[in-house]
Amino acid sequence: MAIIKKPSDHPYFPLKPKIGVLLVNLGTPDGTDYWSMRKYLKQFLMDRRVVDIFKPLWWLILNGPILTFRPSKSGKAYQKIWDKDNYGSPLRKHTINQTKKLQELFKQDKQIIIEHAMRYGKPEIDKTLYKMKENGCTKIVLMPLYPQYAASTSATVKDEVFKWLLVQRWQPDIRTIPPWFDDSNYIKALANTIKDNLKNKIKPDMLLISFHGIPKRYFMAGDPYHCHCIKTARLLREELKWPEDEILVTFQSRFGPEPWLQPYTDKTIIDLAKNGIKNIAVVAPGFISDCLETLEELNVEARELFIENGGQNFEYIPCLNDNKHSIKLLNQIIKTNLLGWVE
Image 1: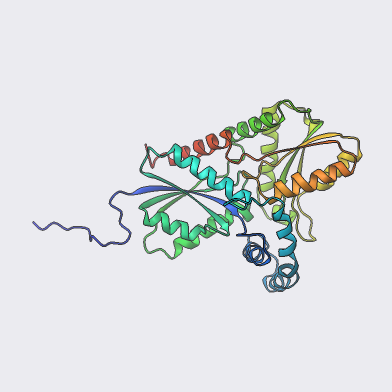
Image 2: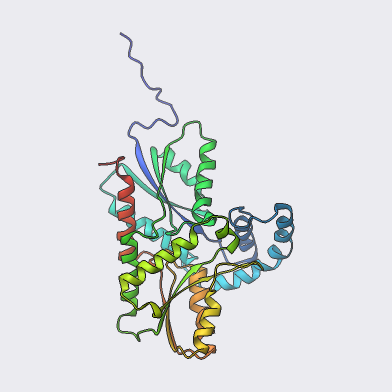
């Protein structure tokens, strides 16, 4: 009786199948110079999930005034937070460290491969998926690093993964991790990070919970992002056991002339200072890693606004980054979503 053997040179038939876990964050420019910033901004702002106005009109606006002047402005902002070491961007640094620490936790399980990619910039999603597939991954767990779902964040990550799948002759199985905005471990991680950073410091009169905004039009079209943010804030307040009148939810980083989710973070900070609030703390739970929007927009610009308008003490609370609460949280979420694929 003849024995049929697998071809020894088959390109994608691993003898020992592995399971991949792919962490995906927003991304970062390669540098703060004009052309690096232009390349990054063009990729980001050409994404229809991010800006969905009439495409020919937007192409003219983007390739005209925006990509002419904004790269220099954004580059100067990035320079304020840019690492001088091998990482450059803080977001890149924290994402790499998160990946390394998770790899260490899973190192005893040779079946699990953990990698990271960026939606915009490097390492690219498609190249990382090819790498994982070539390393024997027949199943991949996709984890967008956004606790709250938004079409302009979580959905665009999935879009890129599914585009890659479209051109694969042999597709690995993909499992996507759902939003974790109300996960009890996430809420505890946030609360513990806040407590750790406020320990032995002046108790703030107000805790500002600042989320990245989206155009109000996106919300009215059915995006659940606002609802996810509000629930996260409510659960966080309950976990902290803080009075309702000592916490405010605001939205930052608006872009363009149309209305975005309100109240706006910058305007709220000015109003608080002018109304006699002297001590505030600001946390940005929608970002798992510190980045331009937290380190420059909040810790620099918002701080200046508060002090200039009469405030005294401004405490910026770092994101989860790769602290012990963050790694414990990510580890728990990954293990939950590996159930059924590994024992």
